[in-house]
Structure formats: structure tokens, C-alpha cells
Length: 237
Image 1 (cartoon, rainbow, N blue to C red):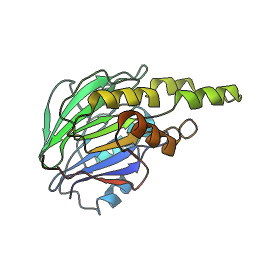
Image 2: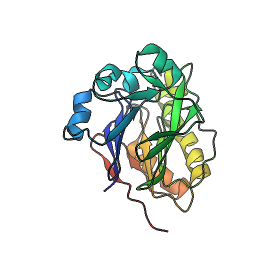
Image 3: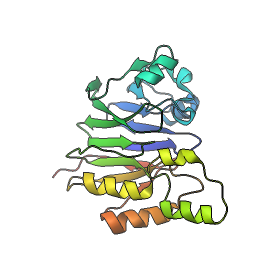
């Protein structure tokens, strides 16, 4: 059975384990490697690579631990920061076992950040987008969409009116409103699953976000929380 397991998702730590029948791919290095190894039952035989989106500590903070066990790939900025990290060139296909990964740049403040198109015979096509102000691309044939919905403009405004001090950094992330636009642009009849990533602890509402995605996009979405495992087995159309 193929699935995406969330190890952690949010402002403190991020990590995901993508499992096909005979291939595994680790996404992000924001949780201690021992947690990832535990999710793998300490069997790393089928782990083909670790891919990391960008340099911020909640995504890359434990890279050196992961390098003890795996090859780690990321953007040039991360490769320059950590010896041994292999740089990924945007708009280039990379083969990791049965996975084909195509990184695309996304805007995230002053940090170089990558999104990933991930193809595998067992799961079809998945797109992974986090820590991105927007996703300006049109990708066809998506079966699984994993996309950031960090905050809501409405919740942000309400918090501001109630006197809360808002972090300027949240504006470098994808709002729910932008997420709705991205889903509507990318969805197709082949879409099987949507997972909302990296919700802000204070500026989001998981159940409200899921309802709005259904109301405005017509698709059911899960919210990435620790332990969530989403079935990715490819449907036959």
C-alpha cells in the first residue's frame, strides 16, 4: 500500500514520509532523524533519497543527522550551507529509484525554496508545495496535491483588530485564499487526494479550512498532523 505519512507539519517542524510499494522518499529534515527511522521501523532498505525544500530550521534543521543515513538533496542555497548536500537544479528531472522528482522554484521571501512534482507508477503524480507565497505553474494530471494553507486573511485581520502582534514572516507563506486559487487551477478529474500543509498555530482553523476548500473547490481535504497517513494507491481510470 502506498501512502504519505506526516511526521510533523507546522511552524516548529516539518517532515513527511512518502511510501510506494518498493520505494520510499523522505521529504524535509525538520524532525530528528530518530523519529523518521521509527516511522520506517528502522528499515531503510527502500529509502531512495531525502529531499528538502529550503534552508529554514523547521525544514532543514536536522540535515546533518539525515546525512548519516541517506543522500540529501535540496536547493543550491542549502547545498552551500551544508557540506555533502547535493544541489537540485530547478526544471530538471531526477530519478530516485522508482520516483521521478522535478523541482520548481517558488517564492518564499529571501530564501531559495523548491516545490516538487513527484511521479511514481504506484501513486501517479503528486505535487508538494510548502512555504510558498504562490504557485505560479500549471501542472496537468495531478493525482495528489499537498499544498500549504498557512493562514487565513480573515483570521489575520481579526487577530490584528484584537491587538495581536502579527509576524511579518507569515506573508511569505501561502494563505488559505491563495491555496483555494491554486487548487482550483490545478485540480482535474484525476485528483484523488488533497492535504493541507504547514497550518499556522494561531492564524488557522483546520476544520474551517477543510470546509472552505470543499465549498470553494469541491474537493475533500485532509490537514497534515503528526501521524496522518493518506492512502495514495493509484486508481484505475
